[in-house]
Image 1 (cartoon, one colour):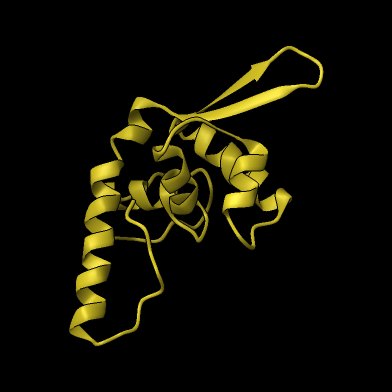
Image 2: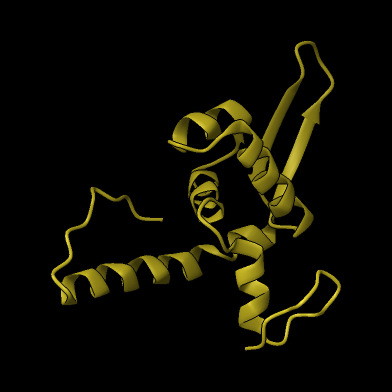
Length: 120
């Protein structure tokens, strides 16, 4: 898998495409929350300890641009915005479940302590 040198270069393999879409610290955790159902911005912000509002906004915009989440804006006062998974986002659940299981197995093999984690 080759590294991209600029934003206009195409990914060199399908794994790179997937990693560009869900890579980073926060995107998988955002998806975990959305697997449980539609969420508003503040619900996501409260659930993701340590994420700043700016970072959450950025990550949500990237996930939306990649077609993984849907942003629904309700024209009301005060404004209401909800986030949910698209079909492409829902298709990631078995992938992330497999990663979760791999992490559990890896930790067990290496006798690593795990925090109290919930499944994806």
